[in-house]
Amino acid sequence: MTTKSNMSSREMIDACMQHSLFSWSATAKVDPIPIARAQGIYLYGPEGQRWIDFNSQLMSVNIGHGHPKVVQAIQEQAATLAYAYPGMATEIRARLSLRLAELLPGDLNTFFYTLGGAEANENAIKAVRMFTGRHKILVRHRSYHGATNGAITLTGDPRRWPTEPGMPGVIRVMDPKPYEFSFGNTDEEIVANNLRYLEEIIQYEGPKNIAAMFIETVTGTNGILPPPKGYLKGLKALLEKHGILLVCDEVMCGWGRTGKLFAFEHGDIVPDICTMAKGLTSSYLPLGVMAVSDRIANHFRENVFWGGLTYNAHPLCMSCALAAINVIIDEKLVENSARMGEVMRGHMARLAAKHRCVKEHRNIGLFGCIELRKNSAGERLVPYAGSHPVMAKLGKFLRENGLFTVLQWSMVMCNPPLTIDEQQMAESFDIIDRGLALVDEVFEGVFEG
Ligand SMILES: Cc1ncc(COP(=O)(O)O)c(C=O)c1O
Image (tube, protein in one colour):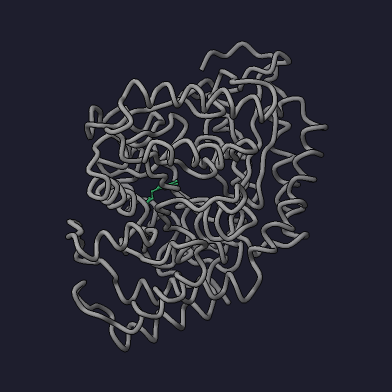
């Protein structure tokens, strides 16, 4: 298929920059890639430029771009019933809910539909407060939960700072793996120490005041951090002891990204609530969902759930979700994520052995990053919330050589669509390999970010 575009790259970029705001950016400083179409793992520009999408856009296009089955499902639903108000029952709402109840583990059988991850978390905040009659919420510093008022207050990272103080009642605690500090050397030690610390916080805040703890099951933009072994089980037991609910935010790590359908399956737990978006529709259309356990669902059979959205249970978006989920299952993309995750680890290890700028690499399935260092003492290239000019240089190099990914602080994000194959993976790491040579050049340099 040829690239269809009525605008040149320049025209697109100029008009977008002149008349639209870009998220998390000063508009004059953005440097957007002009995209005309996308297929599989590739993005194409108006003049036929091609980039590998090595971040699945925002870690969200899990099935890759342009899947015909999803396009067809959306087209058919649009022609049949594009929208119905949230008080209606529709066939697509029934079908998607039945499918989700089938796929989600344990008794996560009931769903509230939103338009994205932040809204799913906003509604989870309401649900845990209404269900428990308690007010406070525990969250962790190395986290992102969305940009709306409540969700950005749950967020630990610096994107929260400009909109503080935000929503009252949020207590932020240290992660099992904080940025510059360690709770121990082995997973066992880390988990035991972190949970002992957390229980002390719970005592200080008064267990009877705490409704829930929200966690990203595997932390995403704050470092691709799988929990240490035993953490999820220990955390769930500790919270249960105090009648505190566990909300797993699987907006980024759900739907096969980690090599299991849901990341909490790695820890052999089922949370009380799970929030999802992104991979749910592979982002072809916006949809989020809050899944609740039977216990919570039963509460709201008798008690009003005080939440609503004009686009709650949007038929068009739900048709997209059902089709995208079926692609994940039918095309065995969870299995491919686990298998290709091992291939990715091999490439990362090779680059770590070759480049002195690599501090470490982490991945669980196709959720991964390479973290860079600035010296042999192992200091991160970029300090927390800081910057380093070589990262912009690296980004430019990757882009000019046909690879799009997100560079976050010292991290090169490695989150391709779950459809990626060996040859595409090798091609991607070849470009990253050449890019890292630029970072090696500034190793032991004195720049203060
Ligand atoms: C873990 C997590 N939760 C919530 C959100 C917010 O989702 P959305 O941008 O769809 O509102 C994100 C987005 O990146 C996320 O990564």
